[in-house]
Length: 374
Image 1 (tube, rainbow, N blue to C red):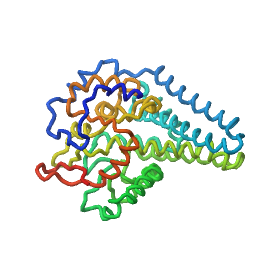
Image 2 (image 1 turned 90 degrees about the horizontal axis):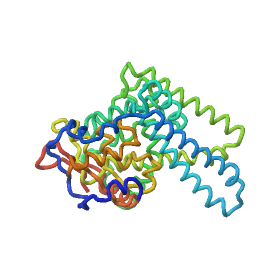
Image 3 (image 1 turned 135 degrees about the horizontal axis):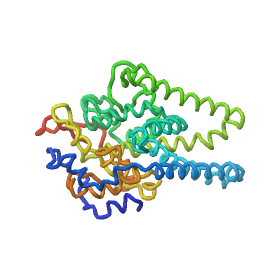
Image 4 (image 1 turned 180 degrees about the horizontal axis):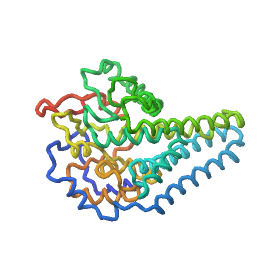
């Protein structure tokens, strides 16, 4: 397996449907921080740039191969080569996306202006509004697993979910999975799909919307300008080279990136064993612990360990991705049963969670605590 497999190879097998502890843990955030080697909290500008440049070189190399070789392959060889390119390129774009995600957490360097500059440039290149995501994602980290205040992957209560009967069958599960993977990424940023309920128009592209406060709105305009500039550049490229060429070289890899993003963020926050809390029970630490590490094999390395070390990322979001596995190893003995890890094969896991994580119901014995229910 990849880094995640090595990281968790000694994990004890457990019933994945068994509820994890929801009592207030016997440790605090200071205890967890003390367990992590101090160097894990240090950002290295040279190391961060190394990973950024490495991913950019890989992306350009694959583009070069596709443009100079795959594009000229005869059928049926092109039927195999093109999907392989789209998947490989899209996977590396996820890694690039995660490096820039570090910028939003001020985990790239010691210079906030540099983090924001790099973040704005490279998130715009993959049509992601950098500052919009930075601010909504900050709210997500501050309110993880809160039914009232979390920003994304907020589950529905059974009595709020009128379409449950439609989805609780294999065809409905398949439709939901396909919709989530294909339309979830643009749907989240344009319409706050799977996000918190707001009054008004809660789009990440709406600077005047309810997601943001007045001090943030100018930077939301800047994020919009970055995405619009890239879209205009793509339009000019398409006019010159042909839109089929643009779709094959950039469009389909971008779709793969978006699908992977939806896959791993969904699996990090949806699991039959983890709880959600309303305002009567929620606190920051238990909310942050209601996340799940997964194992993606070799993709752990390509994705820079974000999906397979997500629990620690929610506890200490400024730890750079290149220290996050070591930090996870360090806190696991302290976390004990509060550490959530599931090495179920990813395809099996996404099918199972799509089936079993449709809605939540309140624990009949512990008011304010909610579990996914079939």
